[in-house]
Length: 160
Image 1 (tube, rainbow, N blue to C red):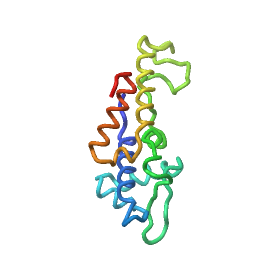
Image 2 (cartoon, helix red, strand yellow):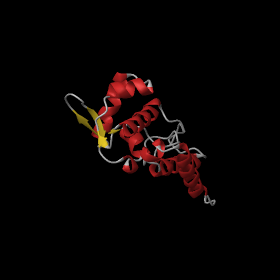
Image 3 (spheres, rainbow, N blue to C red):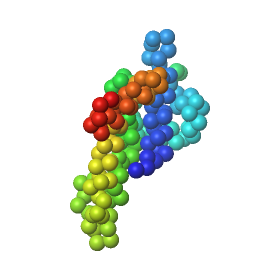
Image 4 (cartoon, rainbow, N blue to C red):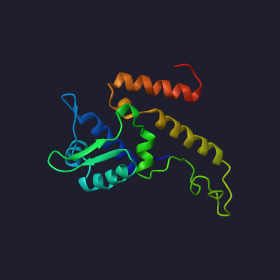
């Protein structure tokens, strides 16, 4: 399973937005130029990503002086899986045609012998990313590590 630059950069940018949108307790819009500079991501690439994030309902744009973007929900209600899916990043580990398609990855259209293994991995990755919020990502490392450990334990069935 490989997450593309699009998915990784979208999560980085949204985490930056979440971390930098509060100013003295008041929510403020964050410009893409600020995010681009802090995260070292091309401004034109961020514009493309935020267009998709806006269409996905994850951010709203604010025009005028002090304009930029805001989260539509709080960081603890913004899930990483939703961010990745909003920028059209598929969360699957198989090389088969789109999800739900009966067509497999083999030349004749059948599914390979390891299809169920990779399909299950893709579902677990999605479940994990759907359990992690932006608040978890921007929390102090100890909290994020504890959350990740708990999530991985839940997936494996082992106690945390």
